[in-house]
Length: 342
View 1: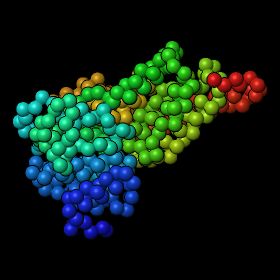
View 2: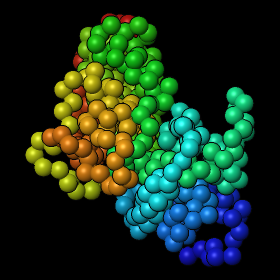
View 3: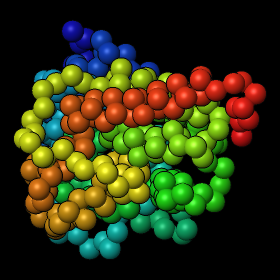
View 4: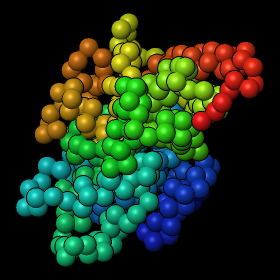
């Protein structure tokens, strides 16, 4: 166990960033547990913003692992801070975290959230530094960290997927509705290759849902280049290798219906960000003004967390690979000269 009791906040911050960037597993738990312990001791205190910043920086790592002591401690601490700080009166109409959500690349926050220093570079003439350490802003970052670690379990996340995700949703909608306004071969191969090396649970689930929603097109007569289904099979197999093998907690009929490829391709990208997941939650009737607490997954017949269920995703991936493998077999049965390509 690493002794971190004598480290300064500056030294801890450097370690948090190293964990975010290089993910040395043997170093992670002591830092997470230390940060969670300090935040839990005083979730609404003067230093709460420091420990929220630390857990936010390490949230991407925690989102890639099965539930363990460090993850549970982090979630408990972040939820306590969100509830304590989010319940305080605030005169601000908006907060910096809302504007920065569009910049969360693959759910990993790579910029300066200002929580350690209390300052952000002035943008568009906005020099209200008080917003950065406003309890409402710190609570907002705490909620985002919770949603990255445990997607669709916390309310009051601002609705709206990142701009580049919305663009991908529109592009894929054209393809699955059979009126592509771009090169579908290039798009589908690009989608197949876009899985990060260490995806969060939300990004991994969204990727597999997207692959399933688009596999019918790649396996149809519209695609005459075997590199398209081949790239998708390779991507799905890599994603499956990263899935947990935990037991399924859902009953009969509680896994999502993916029969509508247009809806599924949209959900596939909405699952990849806190703002996108908030859009899913809003559609299913969550009230964003409710208290911060662990949610049961929605009020409909299908619990929202079922989109993240490893058993569901394994089944979906198997269906996707079967469809694409059949397409590849058809290519292999054809004479080489008939495979024209794009």
